[in-house]
Length: 63
Image (tube, rainbow, N blue to C red; front, side, top):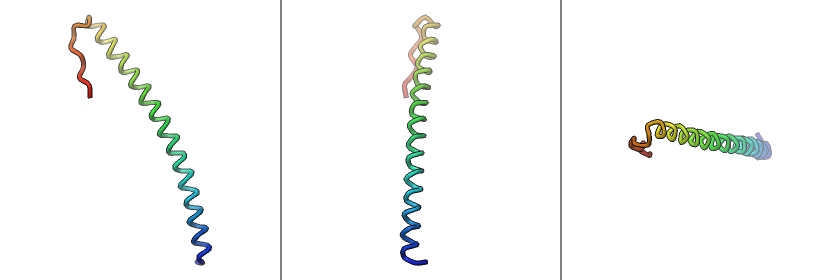
């Protein structure tokens, strides 16, 4: 294998890694949005439970 072939192969690998990284970043953004959505839903459920108990129940511990 010549030096040029090695260089071209390395460049191809770099391009593939760049595309994979961009796809991974997009997936991470989607997951972050999902987590925020789940957090908002959980807060609403906790509020509903507290309201149902008349507000006299102790607050749920935060993590």
